[in-house]
Image (cartoon, rainbow, N blue to C red; front, side, top):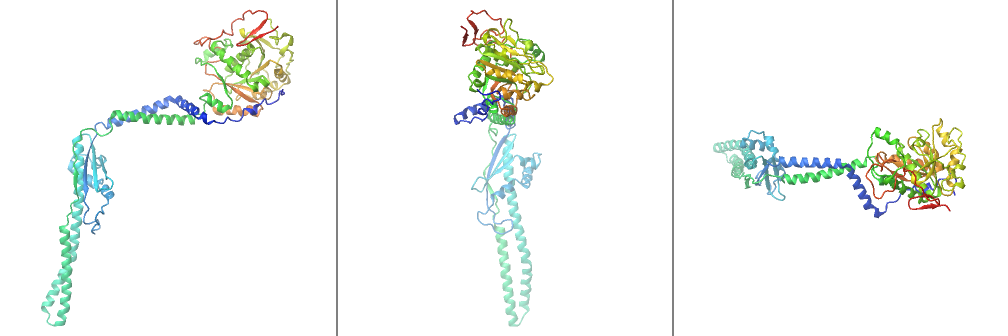
Length: 576
């Protein structure tokens, strides 16, 4: 058997458990359940999605879209005046032209609706079907007739603008040719007069050659002008003329509401996941297991939320629980009894991670009673030397000497001297009446001037060492681990730690820090006992009754035959 300072197998529990592939569905279900804790975010996302879908559905209920389709004919001249190659029309440029402000101004003059061209262009959509020289003008308005008029007006404005550009381009080219032809005509007339007035044969031949060249050039220019004036500048033609639509555009209000709700669910789940990722609080027992690398030994039944006045009244009630709450404490005690690490040492430190010690105090008392039911020699050491209260809140057993509950001849805990050098432990043990569970011993705490010195004294070490006796169990109640260093001062001798916490009030990094502190002090965390606000020692008395609850521990003890010393849950200890 290891000595008081042995680590007690703490290293066995520190490594994080590996995730087995078969556990992945359980982890996914657990994560989904955690997301459902943020129902208000999911509901907010659904509400926003439905509102957005409803707004889109209502705004599109009176919107009508009409479409006009036209074919774009390649023009004989491009913007530079050169002849364009067959099929060389850029449909991307034509689409940009159809959406230009110039076309919008021409359509506004046609519609004469009093709206600005930019406002009219905002309701227009121009598309080009792939591998075609077609443009599709889709115009949206609040009435079917206005939609059809708008689509036809924009198509006509585009064709008119394109035809005007082609005609203006041809006129500029004709004007340019005429300007080139004018000096040639003058040169031709001059050469003709010179030929008529010349009498020498040599000079006549050169003049005739120049005159012939000028006349040929004038003929070419005249041919180009004739070709330009004869070119077809038709920009295109309407293939499908817009007619007033029979139904509004858009998917309709019911479909938009459904789509909005679906999008809202996605947004809500995303927001809940982000909130879950950045939430440091513990939400599920799985979070506790992953943070502590230790199991959850039990979860106390949920009690009512209590105010400060109700909490003060609750502190005056008996700590021993009954009903479902007592059964949960018994279940935790049995799990501890069958734990290999606890079975080697039979001592456990009951502490909360931070905050109030009330639930941990009730847990230590009820676990002591549960171990007493099993026939163990139980000693509860109240190491809370700052606000001790167990002596006032527990009922003393009359006529029973400490340590002699099941084996009076052994002397039990009474053999320990337990006299501290600064007033604690004071050397006396108080037998506590746990009702039908039996009797356990209590070493009460009281205020001292030097708490660390008292907790590390040899008297405390001797008391803790008596847990090595057969059928002995030691429970030590200490203040919160993260609030005071009292629990850390005891871990090297008590070894095993039972953490009592409310998962809604503790953070994951708090649990991880507790695990690191306990492991660093040479101990190990046996597990966690979870509770919620209002649970502790008096829940289960006034709440809804659970299935087949045993009698309340706080009732006066019944009389038993002489051969029976104690009757527990599922086992009976006999003295012969």
